[in-house]
Image (cartoon, rainbow, N blue to C red):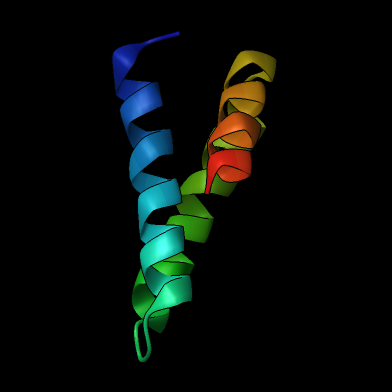
Length: 57
């Protein structure tokens, strides 16, 4: 897996968590959700990586 794809996945999960746990940050939640969905649709390895990140969150 490319480091770029992993970085995008980590950024997506971080934005998802930031938008979920703080108030009035819907933009961060939606951007994180879009990045996570993009990564999940990309490949099986990246799907497993994102699942592990979300379990950690």
